[in-house]
Image 1 (cartoon, rainbow, N blue to C red):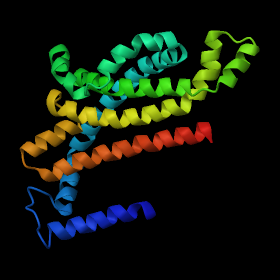
Image 2 (tube, rainbow, N blue to C red):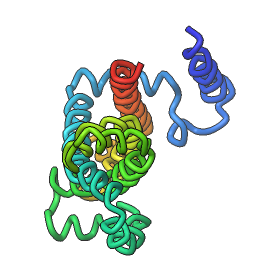
Image 3 (cartoon, rainbow, N blue to C red):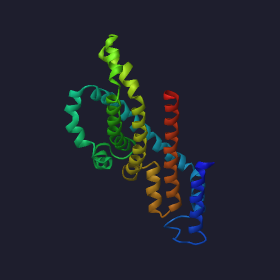
Image 4 (cartoon, rainbow, N blue to C red):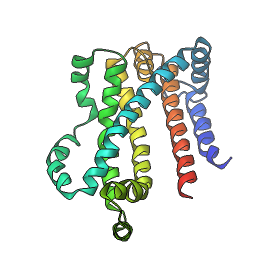
Length: 241
């Protein structure tokens, strides 16, 4: 019950300041009762589930695509100093560019819908996962690599049997960071370049001054993030403990 203590206190304070005291109008900050009512309506109508599924699909597609490309590339760059040196300049230029800056091009290239949102998520997740993978490879103990070479391992065997397993904890940490970035990118992209998803729900509800639904959409994103965090913790506990 300890993790629930702070949220419960926050809800109580929220109720006190929004209902009896009425510190701010309802359309500025909805009351907990308004949020519960909006959640009930969205759940009964099926809209919340549909938007959540649309967001999850974008997150998973973008994260998988980013992982499939950035993890092998990160292993190669971390393994080969020459390749890393050759790529430093382009990575240094592209990495600081915010994913939202790609939204105009995503709309021009892919239109509105699933693909532009997936593209934005891909751009947001790619570099964090890549950097974490490179760092994980570089943290591999040289003693393990030298021991493998002594036993006659090839470069491919060294990468697959020694370096990748050794860097896996750091890679998973990069994936956890990538999920958080993916959710932020998804919501931003859905507000502009989508007709479905929790970001679309938030933007559409805010235009209608339905602040209760806005909070429901925000909390749903938090629940999805918590769900992914629990999954990664389970994976880490199974693999590394």
